[in-house]
Image 1 (spheres, helix red, strand yellow):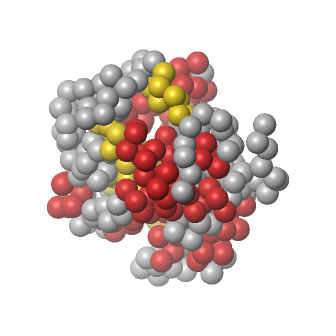
Image 2 (image 1 turned 60 degrees about the vertical axis):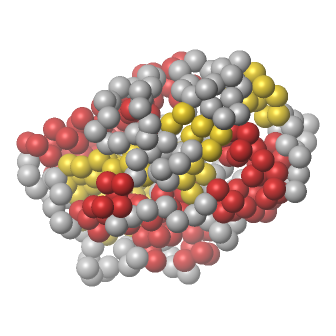
Length: 348
């Protein structure tokens, strides 16, 4: 691979998982070009990426709905592969603004694929989600489990997976890898990049760490009457750097011309909400104020991956443990109390 002539387009590369993947891509010898509209991310993350990697990173503030802008980029660079993260991801918001999600996620991907086809770039790694399994009846969840989404966000992921399967079936030159993430957590060990939710966090870990640092007064734990060891929901939390390395394994696998194939990215074991709270308390040395509230509609008791297919076919498995996730998440949060925003923390 000649890094001067071959570029990998990373849509949503300024975001949480995208930024960590860019670090791993550069370390693996790939040359990324980031496009991001910054609606859920910050330009500061690009500066931090350059700090970590010691490389100048090409960045374009561009929306994937901007077909002309994408065409100009593909016309000017020899892009051979795409890693596609760009998408709205708040489950709650998707239920109240479904059209926004279908336009951004599904239509945006359609435009991206259309431009890719025009410029004969037919290799893509897609950021999917374990939400495509809906309320899975059996755990661990394998890739051949029945697919069914229970909210508009999940349905957009499922719809895009279907699009990729269809174009791959219709044209054997297309190679599409669908990465179904379980629950990303943690941050880069440097503490320079991490999860920076724009508003109320959708994921558990930043909610815990923001409560620990005093940005939020209390953490709501949704239900303590599930059939789990301590009554709280059990999920498969995976360190974001492990997740990022999964994308490198996927990019490498594209060269084998696999067609369209899906892989779970998870650890294969679950932790309860209370176990995660206890681990962050240990990492931070702070007591976390939480309260038990009613279950959320649609939440399942237990969900964790069967990651054996990724190990067998990609040679990938998670390396970081629960303590690593919590320590790195706390390092990021404590060094960046307001995320990428430099303004002082408001304890109100």
